[in-house]
Image (cartoon, rainbow, N blue to C red; front, side, top):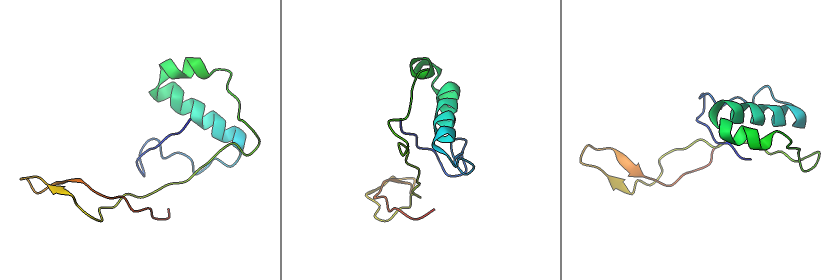
Amino acid sequence: MGFEGLPAGEMDCWQEVYSTGQHLQQSLSILSRWLPWEADRCLGVELTDAMGIMVGCLTPCVRQPVLTLPSGRQVLWVWQMQSC
């Protein structure tokens, strides 16, 4: 499973997750709330190993706009990773 959420959004909820077990429970909680039809399929999931998690973030920023609409809004860009 992999989740991506907006910084300070409802899925930006990993700050108090310190163990792999907590990580799995948080993932299942996200599934239950946002994708209940998938949560039913994941009732018996387990981590692949004791280090089977990955946590990180990237902050999007516009570096090279590709298209500007008549409204002035930019619609395509290149992402740059920044530390969180």
